[in-house]
Amino acid sequence: MYEKCILLISLCLVLATVVTADIRNGYAPDLPSARQCLQELNRRLMENPDMSESERRRINAAMKKHLTVVAHYELTEALLRQMRMISPDMYDQMDQLTDKRGRLTDIYVRFIPEEMASVMLSGVSFFQTSARDVDANQSRFGEFTVSIDIWICETALNLLAHEFGHTKYIVPNLAAYRQYYRDAYTRFTTSNRVGHSGSDASGRMAYAFGHQFLRDRRDFRKASGDPPQRVATVIRGVRRGMQETTDGKFSEPIASSDSYE
Image 1 (cartoon, one colour):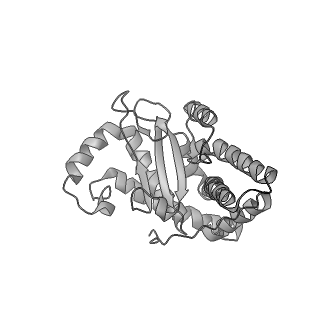
Image 2 (image 1 turned 30 degrees about the vertical axis):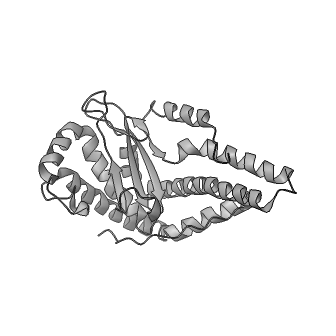
Image 3 (image 1 turned 120 degrees about the vertical axis):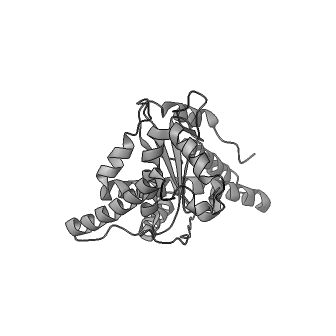
């Protein structure tokens, strides 16, 4: 009962995202329904002061779930702003990504807690050939999209730059890379080495983008006189903003992750 969401708004938002290429917040499709559910659940609490304790607990649990979506959306927005501020050229380059046939491809980014990961890697990009043709990529967000999940950790933006490199190479070379991948990694058993062999052009570009981000970060610090905000600081800012607008509390632990060298 409490988990029902308004799907029409989200569906319209997803359908609208194929018009122009963009780096998009992966929580955006779920945001309208999460906010609407929060309003409805809060209204029930306010209008029923004599509600049973068990009913109140169920409503509070549902509210926490939707608050988490809103919090992750806000954190992803803040970190994407950081990325664009530190590496504007890289960001703009990815913001206009096209496939082999010149079709714009959106990139959906989610910063996620480690326990939400579907693949136990601190950064992962999802590619799948669309039924349309071998050069069209699709992800959970639809046709002409790429999905990137990054663990919430202090090296999150370094990891995002690395995944941007993979995406930059694979999207315009999708069909050829799929064949290379099958030939090169069929017998690989170590998942964190897949995509990073010495002959893998995608892996080389990922490392190049990672190193470019580190250079951009150093240049940003020299120009501004201060380092970019740490991820923990961004999380605290998001938490404060949520507490100012809701009665709920959000506490997001920072996952551990190896630093990208």
